[in-house]
Amino acid sequence: MRELQGRSILGINELTADEIRFILDTSHDFKRKWKTGELHEYLRGKSLAGIFATQSTRTSSSFETAMTALGGHMLWLDKSRIWAGTAAAESWPDTIRTLTRYVHGIAYRPVNRQMLDLTEELASVPVINASCPVEHPTQALADVMTMQEHGGGSVKKAKVALLWGYGELNPPCGLPNSTLAMATRMGFDVSIACPEGMDPDANYINAAMKESTAGGSKIEIVRSYEEATKDADFINVYSWVSPEIFAEGPETGYRGNPEFAKYKESLKDWCVTKDIVNTAPKSVKVMHCLPAAREEEVTSEVLDAPNSIIFDEAENRMHTIKALLALTLG
Ligand code: CP
Image (cartoon, rainbow, N blue to C red; front, side, top):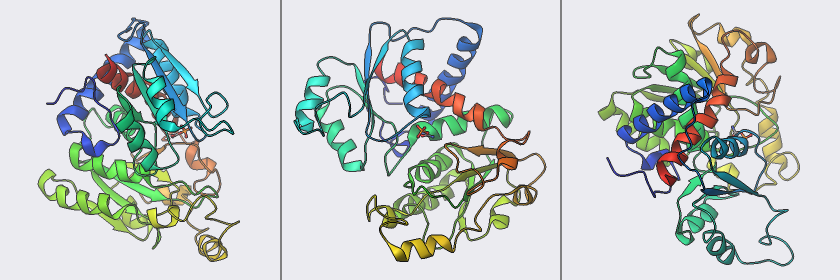
């Protein structure tokens, strides 16, 4: 296993199964310590720059509280605090080269993947992807940790039904891509139910399908919820757009593109209801990375049901991020 210390983590696709298991084992250990009040200040005196170019509740709060629990500190750097992107327009290279004189790592949520790659090239400290249009690795780690907790410890041979839901927001497919990369490494099956035209990144689908043969996991894309929920252990709901649609730019959607608006309108029935959940085995657990478009992509009846594990999933963002930070910045 390659050292994690000093490494940037931009995607699940750059981690081995052993490395993921090590991060998850550390996450469970940190969660136990956090619950019992046992100190785990492995980053005492260290600082992280948290740069968020778009809104974030869970990821940003998880990085910040993780640094506190590890005895370190996160600088919250949104566009109201730094010169880059303002009228003064300090260059991004000057910004990153300056910051790396102060901090031991950078958590970055960019608007596009190119900015993340550029930042990683410029930085002399590890850069952690806090969600970009191509991958959302910290979410995928938390999802698997939560599945382990609710699935008897192992996710091998578990089946995840990843259900596309209609939503007004048009986020990119970073989470489905990371889930596909995670599945082949951890040996669980993924059945993605999404409408035609909303498939995740073809590179991730093709890689997962190729790797699944070797790893024993089954990956499929289907066009109805029922095909995916059959035999599912976990239902995970998310509302993404394909990379092709996302590439059209932030104005994609109701304001900018009448054709897209018409297409989205035709997908309003893609809402995960209790009836859909009932097509899965009774033991199925419901997940969502949040924020959820309640009553659009999934009903509140589903999100607030006893088999919903969405807030365990949200909490585990912090524990997995803590592990990732301790192992890369420690
Ligand atoms: N799941 C997730 O990434 O949430 P935030 O956008 O609130 O960080």
